Length: 373
Image (cartoon, rainbow, N blue to C red; front, side, top):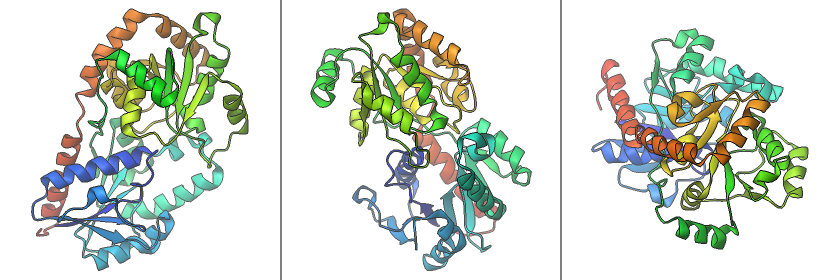
């Protein structure tokens, strides 16, 4: 069986799709024996993914429309793929190659107000052309499955939920004195802080957190705010950038690797992830695995992933968010309880299980299609 896997996101370390691709490749390689994995992108594959079972499949471009129109079809032929597994979209030409798409979310449909009109219309058009060509859809939450089947009813009975998980890079560090020392040495961080991880895009509801922090009561004067991420060029926000630059107690960190991010999760008093929309919400589990209590959204996939371990609040209710921040930060007993339940919640999700279910789906579809691997 020759599987062509969309690897265009491997270089985009600030996106959840990159984590998904990285973990799925590693998991599949542990299961494959006589199979071959072709990683598809334009530039090449990182050294860490090289093995006898892996080769690079060169795409004509990393630009999605080019691959939908021509690139994926060329790769199917050139590398004699049995399965083409892509993210969000697939090639338009029908062929003997089985087409599987992982759709992480369809937020451009469910939350159109957070997307520029041009981007929204372009993705909608490509999806309308591409999705009918899929043999099967993988998605990452029951919320996303329900939304996909509502907006694309012809995909019913073709959608399978396979959960993501926190990487093993995220775990609890027992020695909190050592954590504090490393935070001071590596980031100049001292004292308690709230943590946010993600793109600075309207969907993430970062403005509400920043507004609370800038106007926080004197009770929380010693508290700092740490934002791991960067502005999304698709959603320019000059006002937010000015506010961030004007406040010394707000630290913006970019280019953070998983070891550093695990340290930041471990040192934070609270993790803020009250997003307006998520197809999964991977940082929720990363924070929980590292022992950081999570304040998250009561909407979309967030409560499904956080379960009772997270404190969920309506992302559209600024007053409720402000109240939750005030109550949680001062309640040590509640934070410790959330940490304990968070460990248990994060442990329910596994990348090994994700890879096992994905590989099993490959084999089932190959068998149903009468293919021999």
